[in-house]
Image (tube, rainbow, N blue to C red):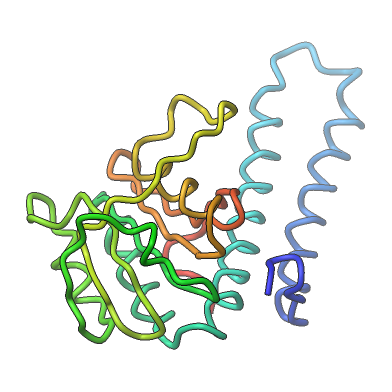
Length: 207
């Protein structure tokens, strides 16, 4: 299953329509008044950008939940963990296996073999811990290993602002069908990588 194959629920369609209507209204206001403006209108553009970013994160969070459900029942624990990581700006990278085995792409990992819980994930990625810099591998509802080194993306189009975790998340998504969650320790922003693309999501996820 690809993201393109996942449909929208009626409630999500309603939410997205509200965002789109707000964007349309903001753009309409700009069009109606631009001839009369004699001052900077960057703030109006920033407002449109903010609403669009909120829309994108809301939709991506919904798709993340829909995408994970056929392969794992641990969405709530993952959602809670990444929300805490985001709030505390603790970096993290979590690879969820889908159809293809990810073990050929994992290097130097330490076996864990424990059920996924947000408290265990938080202990693994606690800053300064021996495993916090590597990636966690999840198969179904089990943390198979931690501290894994992933292949970095070799794409020449990536922003130089992307750190090692994001490059590793994209790198694994380019060679497998995995879904990889990544949290920036610099900004606390949460994203997921799939099929060579990176999508920002709202910490706490979609309910």
